[in-house]
Amino acid sequence: MKTIRNNTRVLLSSITFILCCFYMISAQEIHPLEASEKHYESLKKLNANPNSDRAALDKISFPSEKFSSGSLIYTMIVPEYLSLSQVDELKKSMHYPANSSDQTKAELAYLLEWQKKRTKAQEDRAFNVLAPIGYWPHANILENHPRHKQNLEYLFYHGITVMGDNIRAENYPATAKLLKGITRDMRLMEFTVKYHLLRARPYHLEPKLKPLARISSPSFASGHTLWAYIQAFAWSELIPEKRKEFLDVAYEVGESREIMGIHYPSDEEAARVLAHKMLTAMYLNKKFRKDLETAKQEWK
Image 1: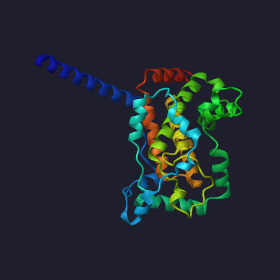
Image 2: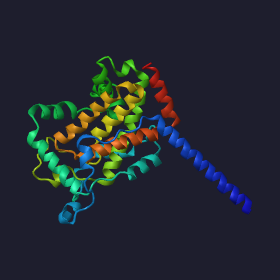
Image 3: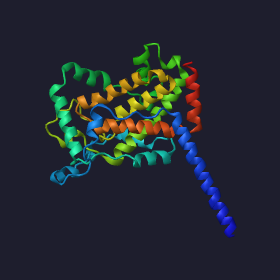
Image 4: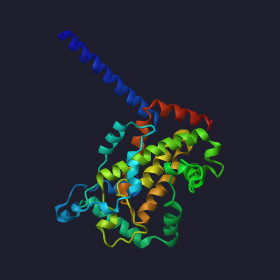
């Protein structure tokens, strides 16, 4: 019996080692995540822990009466490429700087500076052009949905922006299938994290902020930015030589949320990191790898 137990331990250890190796090899198949840059790099170095001088701020969370039932429903959908255990693991890996922290204080000051310097043109682009962008799975169910056509254009926003108007879902069906699956999981992940952490929006903490919109879901992480980066990472797996251009598109989307005064910089940076974690986790799924390889064939 003792020999059997020992053999079982050895076998389990071997399986664990193989799985770890497989994960590491798989992770290497996805382009590594770039380091933080611009204002994210400096802000993330500040103390993110609670500051007793501003302790009252730590009692503030996103108000429950503002919850959107539509966004809550997305926490209930079945993922396409991620497993539910991966969703839970990724959710638990996310943390935001304390409301009272030095980092959050600096981020609020950064947003107030944006409020002072933003131009009418920047406001118009952030609110009228970039804010409506984003693929929503529910609008794809029925072809006669009033937003169906526009929704598919948004699905290919990065491709159209970087490579031109002919880069559309109907011309690249395998790429469309891949991006739809990725974005389905992204919406599940977005609202799972938001409603798990309930981070207050910047204007809940700083009354001097005059946001260009008020949003009916918690702040962390930024959904627009999560969508923009996971799309950029996916596109750059298909067309690696244009990675920087795709990432520039994502950065602009994230920055637009700060211009509007509705997201902290840490919301954008967390979304960027989470997007990469998600794509790396998806790569462990055989179906994802197959869909990715099929989509790659469209770009050879």
